[in-house]
Image (cartoon, helix red, strand yellow):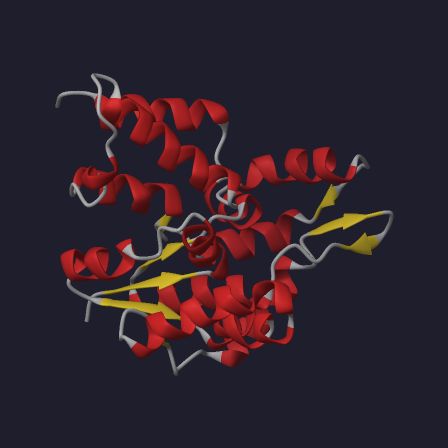
Length: 229
């Protein structure tokens, strides 16, 4: 069965960018199931429903589940989640104390995706960097916390080896696919630069609403989408 797992971040990015409506179209094109895990559901629905500021966003995600766009994956291997969370959150230390760098929703998503041979959508830079290019993690954490960070190479190797071959994509790639599918064409303003304005608007909206992407990457993606291939 073809499927794709979502962490909370990309769903939040799309909801906040007013682009969550593209998900049913992407799911139809994908021809499979869009899954979230129970911990991700808690982040997207259960916890936000207790906060006035985020209640409506939670209701939008609830509707996506009710409409069958998203489904909650029921078979999370909890023992593996616990084991790999412990490994990940003991892979780096600062001032002699282990650093919690991966949240439950993130680890559930990547483990379930790996289990089913699926890809996973994650916007947060830390998890993607840890899995795809762990050598850059120390620099990222040192820059983020402005303190020296000590890596545990054995645990890092154990963690990254488990997820070798896992494909991670971001919400900005999903938005790019939606553009290529012409789902956003009704937003193109009049004028010769209408497509440029649309592409810039959706890519920057995605970045400013949570997708960890550099300015240079935004420019590269924009050039690709606007190129006549």
